[in-house]
Image (cartoon, rainbow, N blue to C red; front, side):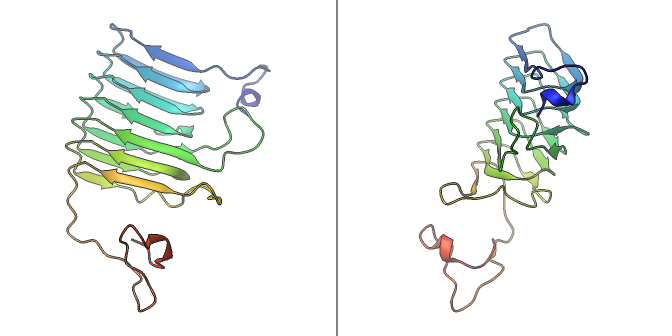
Length: 197
């Protein structure tokens, strides 16, 4: 998996974490990694990544204003508690097999929460089984057109979508396939409804 992508290197590609560095203001990365983690970096303003890696984790970096992942391939996403971030464009390609095992992952996790100043969010990657966009108090604009598919569901693992406690206002919400045999999306009969929302 990720070890094999690095020429002449037989071990697993290392994870890289930036943590509690008060003087760090920007990070620019290319190459191959396992997880990339940024946490508790009060003066970090920009992250620019063009790399192939396992998962992205960006936590509690309250000076962060720019995240650029154009050209990157990675899997799970956590962007949480970054209080100066106003716009986030996650235009990477979903990668399900760069994580240390032979078999691909069948689904991924996406979580963007508690970013107090976030106004807009765009996502063009997919294969998420857990999709959570919550408690972003000023988030008023989202573009999820790139989320074309969920991961592979099983009898015990099904898609979970939570989008609430943001500043989103819907002008129209409708079920695209209603009829005499459909059920209302009411929290009880949702699984029996044949339409998409």
